[in-house]
Image 1 (cartoon, one colour):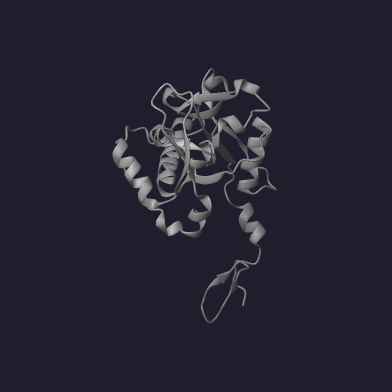
Image 2 (cartoon, helix red, strand yellow):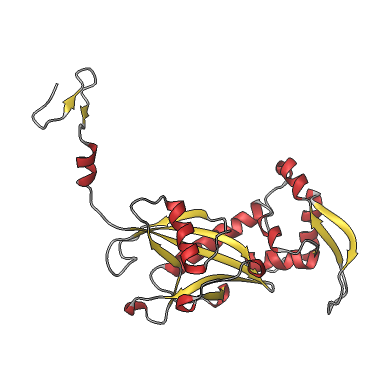
Length: 248
């Protein structure tokens, strides 16, 4: 049965059904949705983030994340990968959606909602093919004021990364195939931004039984050479439950 507003009313449930979903969507408020990519990199025991110069006069000389408005025919993940490719030329990067930012005043031009994506790369193996707008790696601890709310986005994604590296062997891919326990601890200290107790750190990793002693030693190092290890990724895949949160 139709009511006076042209809606179909189910007599049993007394629910008004909408006949024209397009008309309904057309009646919604319209505002842009963007994606911003927070690309972390690890190099020489330092955590860095990939930034460009903002092209807005209001944010002249300030740094900003890699971002763009999503196209009408794009899904969010596709938009994030497109932005990364168009800005850097990189295609072999896994991006994970972290959080949506919707503060009403986050953009000086009006209401803009953005979805943040993040990734962690070994800078040695990911070369920038495009460097427009002064694109380059910045030490994370050097960031202060940024364009838009991008400092808040970077901080949020950094907390996500800190959580991820304690719950998964995410950072092991950033180390050489054979690495020392010193290098492993330096990686965790750089990302967690804390000084870890050497004995406690090693005890926790050895207790999970995923490290393989290669019987090789460090060479040409300014300190006492240490043993070199490999991470047993195959064993980890079979026994993921043995990996527990490394709570420092």
